[in-house]
Amino acid sequence: MRWSLGTSSDMIVMMSETGHSTADCRVLGVIEGAPYLGQNPRASQRVSVWVNGILQCETSLSRPGLIAFFIPDDALGQPVSISLDHPDALSPAAVGEVDDKRRLAFACRTLHLWSVNRRPAKVQPSPPAVAATPAMLLGGFESLGDNCEFGIAQRLSGSESLGLLRFTATPLASLVDMLLHELDSIGEPGNIELDLRGDPQEYILTEKRYNLTYHTFMYADQMPASRVRHREAQKLTLLRRRMLDDLRSARRIYVLKHNATLREEDVIAVFLLLRRYGPNRLLYVVPTDDHNPPGTVEVLMPDLARGYIDRFAPYDNAADLSLDCWLAICRQAERALPGGTP
Image 1 (tube, rainbow, N blue to C red):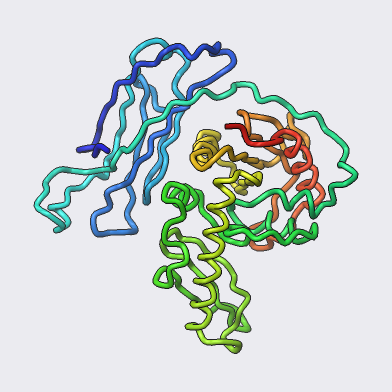
Image 2 (image 1 turned 30 degrees about the vertical axis):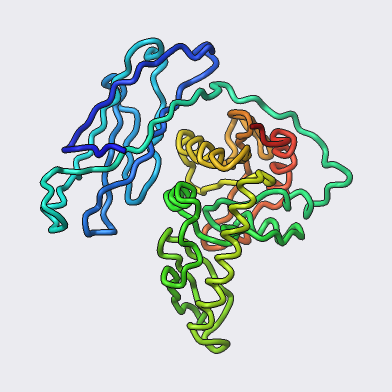
């Protein structure tokens, strides 16, 4: 692990030929980093990544995470200069922690380079399998966020599969942090915060370690907060163990959707995190466009597919979803992602 010092840092990487034509593949760089925030847990470190003098991405880290960016095609076969700008670096001495005057931005743990297909392979539409009911079909998938839309689609189809993130508001940064740390601390009572909202007053739970939020469907006139906290701590502990077991056995297809389209680089980085646990598969769902009708699925990499939906449910009414399109996407994804590969 190396700390980035000052407001900029550099690394030189020798890129070898990948064995694939650049007409077919791109190279993705993924840096794993943890920001230095001093004594302000709400702070963040801005980071810009330049490759051979060309800006590739701008992001910020408020918790341990990944910085993903593509390497330009003309960089293969020669030394590549990766420069990082991090203007928010600060010294531990300045915030009164220790007598360390270095200006720290974030700790760089690893840099990985991956080959990514340039032209996704379309999956040919297929009729539903006779034996696969909607409940059986969607029961083979598990949501990674960002809200409860897919979990409700499972319920409407008749599937009630358990899932840690099934009905949880899960920001992308929180998902990455969880996967980096093997869901550590989930279920600890000290990380559970309860809020009363609505009429009647419902307990809304926030898991503070990863900033996860969900409805408990328990109310102030039913039980005291202490009992709710105890019940939810037990439930979260159980769901954490189950999700780790599922990740390691790679028995499900994970589903990632965000109403605001994510960068392809960030989706691939999440997929690579899932692969640390086992040969996991990921379906990323985005809004349809002029070239991809609703229900279309394409393969970006082995075990990583992108599906196109006609519309997402609004955040304020996640039950207003397009169930038929979700079923069509999952049907095609089941064909596109038939099983994890080692």
